[in-house]
Image (cartoon, rainbow, N blue to C red; front, side):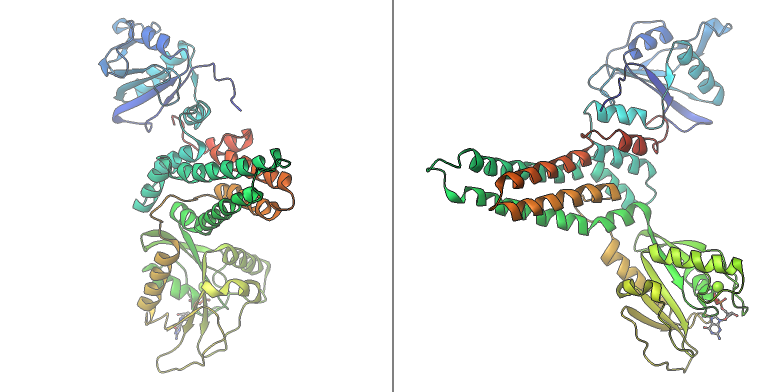
Length: 449
Ligand SMILES: Nc1nc2c(ncn2[C@@H]2O[C@H](COP(=O)(O)OP(=O)(O)O)[C@@H](O)[C@H]2O)c(=O)[nH]1
Ligand SMILES: [Mg+2]
C-alpha cells in the first residue's frame, strides 16, 4: 500500500497571505538536517518551542537572515505523520513565506501534494482512513453540527464502531473454524457452529442500523436539498422567494420564465439547506425550456425532499417520474383566500397557503424544520458519513448475512463470507490495498495537511 515515502516534504500549512503568523511544516527523513541547516544550530529539544533565526546563504544581505521564527522539532515516531517532522512559525508576510519556501527548496525539500501529510500519517498507522476523513471534515466544517460530527469521527468514533464488528466477526470465525477442525471428534458439541449464529445476527443488525443513519451523516456534512417542482405558473418561484425571505428568482405570469435551476441557501434545524427553484414541468416550447425541464427533473430526482406546488383552482397532476418517493415529500396547495380545494391524492404531507400573500409559509417552514430535525439531525453517536462508508458496510453486511444462512449446511463457505466481510471492513479502515481510494480522498485535502 505504502508508496516509499523516503523524500522530505514541506508545505505552508496556514492560509497564504498576510497574517500574524504563518506555519511551515516539514516531514521526512531529512527534516532534522534541514532544520539544523536553516537555523545554523543543533536541533532544539524535541517538542519544545525555540526562537531560532533562519538563514539562507543565497540571501546576501543581512547575513542571509530570513526571519526569526519559533521552531519545533518532532522526531519520529511521535509526530503527526510518524516521520521526523519540524514546524516553523514565521511572520506571516508574502515575502517571508516566499523566502522561506525558497530556502527549503534550496535545501532539497519538495513541496507536498494536497493531503500528503495526512496520507503519510495513515500509511504510518498514526490514524486510520476514517479518522483522516474526520480531520478533512473538521477543516471544512462551517456549521456547529459539522464540527461535532467531524471531531467525533476524527477521534476514532467510527473506528470504534467497526473495530467492535471486527472483533465479533473474528469470534464467529473462531467458532466456525473450531467446528470444521474438530468435525470428527465426538467431544465437540454439535451446537458449536450455532454459537456463531447470534454473533452474526447481532453484527448484522448493528450494520443495518448504521447504514440506516448514513443519510444523517451525509446531510450534516453536505447539507440537504429541497426542490420546488410543479407546472408553469403554479407559483414556484414566488414560493421560493417567500421561503428564502428575499427575491432570488424572477416571477412573472409568463409561463416558462424559470429555466435554469435557481438556488437559495438557508438554515433549517441547524442544517444548511439548499432550495432549488426549477422550470415548470410541461411540454416545452423551445429547446432552452426543454433543457430547463430536463434539469428540473434531474435535480428533483436527487433532492432529499420535493415541494410539489400547484394552484388550488386547478387539479393536481402527480408527476410520474418522481411519484415513487413521494411519501417524504410535501405538497403546497397554492390557493386564494376563501378557496377550499378538494383534497388531492398525495402520499406525503399536504400544506395549504398562498405564495403571493405569504399565508401558510410559516406552517410550511415549521413542518420542514421538524422533518429535518427528525430525519437528518446529527446523531449523538459516531456513524457513517460518506457513500464510501455505506458502500463498504453494505458489502460487509451482505457477507455476514450470507454467512449466517450457510452456517448449518456449509461452515466452510460461511467462514469464507466472514473473511470477505472482514476485508470490506479493512477497506473502510484504509488498511486494504486501495491506492485509488487514497488518491481520490487525499487529493481533496488542502496543501499542508
Ligand atoms: N393570485 C395569485 N397569484 C400568484 C400566486 N403565486 C404566484 N402568483 C403569480 O402567478 C404568476 C406566476 O408565478 P411564478 O411564481 O412565477 O410561477 P412559477 O412559474 O411556478 O415559478 C406570477 O405573476 C405570480 O405573481 C398566488 O398564490 N396567488
Ligand atoms: Mg418560476
